[in-house]
Length: 233
Length: 312
Image (cartoon, rainbow over the protein chains, first blue to last red):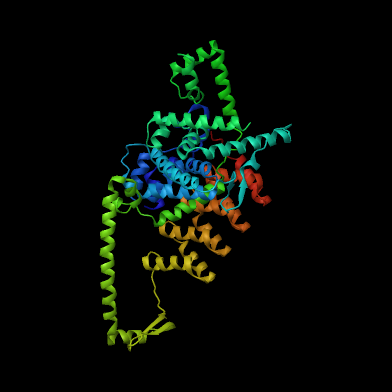
């Protein structure tokens, strides 16, 4: 279907890519709502877009991608620490979703479905990475240039002292190392909960497991992190 | 509710995952119990510690380039329908361990069959190559040969194998709505080494940008053509579609952020004016307004941002 046909199929107010005002209630824990709302706020009717995309309308699929891709990319970036790897996971996740879209039966939301694909890819990535040597807390950008995450830790408030910045950096380095020592599953659960602010139920759906299991994994991850940060003091 | 329960559930409490009644009881308990209040305080400190890790934000550049790459790959991707979904996704099959023995057997049988088939085909093609018909020889002789690649004589036989390239100039005439003409124009836009021909091709294609396939060709020219003149022409042709077509919008945002020609960047900036409320455009403008080395782009981006209606 051409671009015009798409515009005809969807009201222009929804299709111009403008972010709307409504959030997804129930998905986001109140303490970190900012983490996901930015992109999901304006989601148009997913079901309509999915049906259009299932009929082969690529523009509808791209519109669907735009509802969630920022959150997907951010999660992949957090877990891989590399723009290049994050982009690979992003591509693979959405291509997989597109290829298998015909099999989407509306039993879960598209959001849960895409998160399930992404978390599986991230799990595979972390498992592969764990078998390799430990790496320093360095991320790389899309051009392959290395960016030291810890260089970005700086207190820019007026009056912030170099000593304080140094301490913050040391703490961040310890957190990075502690996160790397978690199992891939613990790492994903913790990142999705603490940094992405997702509900345990949503994480369970994404990982295809029960809320209870996610809870236990979160407890284990928290204990390990606390122990690592306390021991390092 | 006892201290042990509180200390076990303090993580859920801090993540706001406790039901309201349990949350209330926990808070009441903590007011009475100093030990539990201290544990909660300790966990809160731990959460504050974790915030020392910098947030990795997705930059507009990263997001735009990821979107563009995805669009490109989607162009060749196909949805798997019906039985193909099961056959064409072997990884999903492998994940279903129950089917692994069956799958291994199927792969073995298919491999064996393919091996046999290939063997017969090789034998058949050797036999077929022996006799070249007179008509075929005539056609080969008539074709204009642009070069001979290799000549090999098979040892112990009188068979000579020659690999050559031929070119036969052709001409076609038709209107822009003719699919063959469109295909040739698109081919010229994407592949011709002569920038003059690419320019002429884009010049013709811009007369019909309402056609999705033509618009894709124009977007391709905007993104990849090495000649700024061709890119600028393509940009002008797709500008009316910035608002309605996401692919066009993304390509224009990419040109605005990354094109090495200031004229094209300025053109892209003006083309995006109508869509400045779009998230990706807004983010790009914010980045440019902050630190673009080109003062004109910086100032114009700021102007566009300030004239934008507030969006919550």
